[in-house]
Length: 255
Image (cartoon, rainbow, N blue to C red; front, side, top):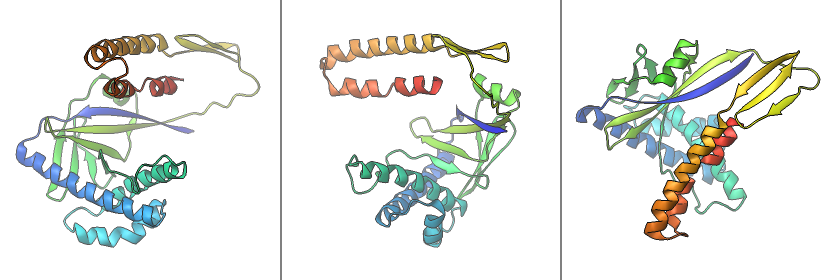
């Protein structure tokens, strides 16, 4: 059996100011822990999450005693992932700073820090108690729910301070049988599908690559027309906008 995961992004309903202030405070404490843990891990060349947790758990708990203890666990996991990436870049000579910079923060929640409450809401543990977070599932979310996928024990949330909302990254998991063919498989690769012949049966996998390519072509065209007119053909702002498209990553995921 193989374990397949899919991540779905949903947005919460708009929070009252008082409730959202609690989430902002939570994010501030979590960010501070991640920053301190990342600096300590880089100074001491620590990549292991378990070792980092063993060395810094009590210090972080004493720093924020009202915060549920498992936030220290998830902050250590977050920091460990950041440090591994930073040290790899540093080894290649691509790191510009001595320590990883924590710019964007997503709060990692394990099964002790959140729990589902029906199909359209979850509860999140904070230093002020549990907060109910309601959201509206979209078509993709309902597709995984109705087809037997189950929610993973881990969730990530990110604050949208402008709209007083939470961006919730739900991970769905499903166990599927892993097919292990013997010998060679004839494969025909086309623009919008890949066809395989297995045991005299043809399987066609639709990729919709044509829609993806055309969609990004028109997006690039709009960006070029807008920024070439305002800033010139070789503007740095245009290059930054083009990088945000992440077309190569999307096409790689499809392949």
